[in-house]
Image 1 (cartoon, rainbow, N blue to C red):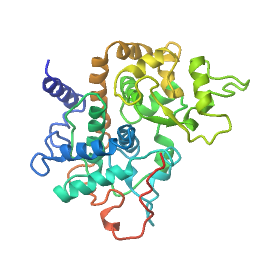
Image 2: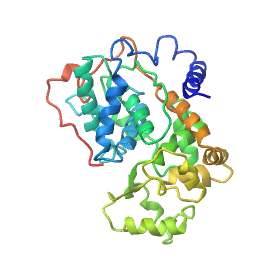
Image 3: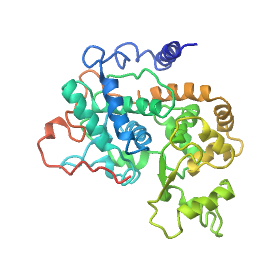
Length: 343
């Protein structure tokens, strides 16, 4: 079965699942065919260049898309800087000194403004960059649904409350995904993006020391792996030390993430919850994806397209920002710097 056939079938499935909106005027895979036909090539080229000096940039870019879509929908609001009227989502607790890749987004936007001025939205840049990042890391490719427009405000309060955290229990994670229209299969499939990239010690160090108050580590964390992580993340460390999300193939987009969960080698508590929560319906999904990479890839594509359709702005809604960090009306006003994250 050809990849183009698979992409077509997935697209048809999504159109049915989302009430036909993907085909009938909202988002479409051909949105820039006439106005910016080389958009994906341009985005891919910038990311390939960035990967030469930053092997984790692909994972960072897809995380930007996740964190954008879970707050106000996929409207590029995460990219906005502080102004007199905007409280940037970049400084929300889950994002501050954590999300990164803004400089690469700026590079992509600059290149696209040169090739196709005022055409490609920042929200669409994040969607395209996510697909290209996965593909460049050895994962699947898919036709990205496009046509999003950029929001003109940010929601720091929403970013503080709506983004799934690394220590959450499974039932809380399920509810947070359900709140944005994503189901349990989407949760497990999208968590598979942790098959590449890095995490700071502060996101999982609570599993290493005094987990239940008696000086122990998380019992769902492989003891040998826990010892290794304790060497990377000392108890009185800064919390900003980095380690691989996938200890086996850290820079490759594959299904090994799920095999790691089966061995109690999920780095984040929220990851291991998918397999170690007694009686959970996620266990069978993890087992399936561990055994069948093709099944994981197919589900991941469907879930990425669903996530990318959350509360999008289209038509005359919003705007096409000329600078991803600023709404057009404020493009000449004072604001903070680009707030490029240190991670």
